[in-house]
Length: 271
Ligand SMILES: [Zn+2]
Image 1 (cartoon, rainbow, N blue to C red):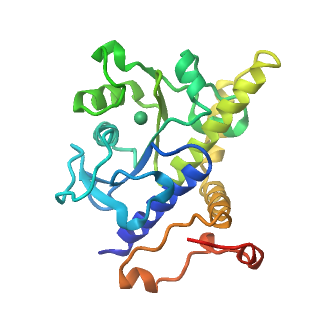
Image 2: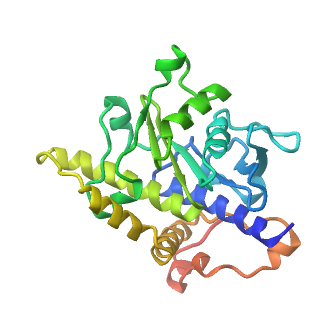
């Protein structure tokens, strides 16, 4: 297996755990990445809570969201979200679907999340709404049919995120690090927006500010810095995923971002 596949699988396991540790994901929700060499496939865990995901949990899917190898484990019911978005958006390399507490009040009230501080610009100018009931009537609100996934992808259109009424949100990125950064900052933005409403009417960033600040927060050095910060926080909490269980992967050195300081090690490090 080429190294970039191993690297992406390990990065995907880490992305799951970072997003869970930072409160974007909980027992539910899932993150995927497009296959590094075959754009007609994507990588996603089998059904497991994101905080527990290990590289060996990651499976390969076609864009119809069928597993490439017959599965021996349960799969995420809502994986069509990922496949349908990868079909619709060739620029998207990573997708997360979540029900973060920060965004739920907006999804329930049907009120838009708008960027209200500079890092919030990572979400773009606006996130459209998608109401499953409009097109599909009474459902259990899970997005499980291909036509539901395609409908959600149409609502997302060229945006970076779509809010799902009474359900959650789906966010996309040009890579896993960009996706993690955008998702966390969008949740922080939603929290700030809601808090600010108790003080008055928050004024969103101007259109030009969203563009300029949004570009800034996606610069490679900024994305690397935030990824390292969230990785170290996860490491300090003892939540880092194990390495991939192949001899080749086991021999590879621990990346800088995964190292802990001697002080953190003394405080206890468990896997
Ligand atoms: Zn869901």
